[in-house]
Length: 121
Length: 285
Image 1 (cartoon, rainbow over the protein chains, first blue to last red):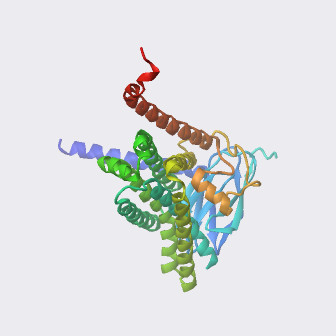
Image 2 (cartoon, rainbow over the protein chains, first blue to last red):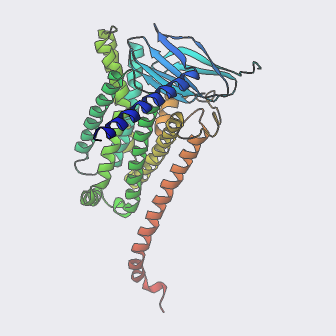
Image 3 (cartoon, chains in turn cyan, purple):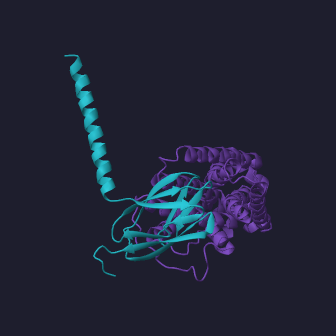
């Protein structure tokens, strides 16, 4: 009898884990977009994302200096420490090009290219 | 070295300008120097803490958490500045008297000093954490070099000089208008910080954008030019604002002005009855 609540707890714990994994899978299905900062350059410098959907961008900094992803047209400002990684959301965006730069080094630039999935303009 | 100097300069500039405004606004209050120094100390401690968390928890740091932290810091500063301005409006009569009277009024309440200490600490913390993170990477990473560190020191020095210049300029304003000017400056500072907070809340997905790039004045005045940046810090100039930023800016401006006006009117009404017996000749009946 005394072991019943314990089992229930264990079961609930497993359920939580399963749900968390499922949630992670569902999240992964929306395909994160990876943006790397390496040797003082954004890679890729033209970052393609689908238009009209909220997209998760993972920014990985492989350099030894912190950087700040900044974009006025996207109104984003995200700090990433040296050798760090940070995830943030972009969009939903209209199809088009959106400039971004490293606020700690304005010479380091890139563009987000939002493309409509229909393959249109 | 130049790039490093520029980065540190920009971070220090924002904090220095806000501290200069705080020093101006607290003019004549005894021991305000100690309070502001305590604020700077608290801010630096907080900045180091934030930088430490950001660099140690590299894999779990999320953009949303960053944005929410920024928004919380900014909105707290806006609240403190509101409190300060409303308190000043309520004591406008005392302010017109000599500075010693202001000192007495404030030392009896000591309340706006707490607000200004908080604002100093928050400004230094927000801007300082990025500077600390940057300098820390320079000092420990593969990029270490005397030139870069020197650049950082020079940048910080230039930022402090800019803050000093603003303070010197403020102090030249005639006493009669002094507190009206500082209140007005703080009003616009608060509105600008509020708009920045709205931007971060939108970034974290807590608020809708209500239209990206409501207008674009980057061709006219680049936000990243020196003048654009000064105006961004002091009055919240944004070259391409989102709708929600404009809403927050306007609401903050309106709300603080309304609260100040309400305090003025209330004070006026309170002192009005004493004014009647002074002019008996006007109403002989």
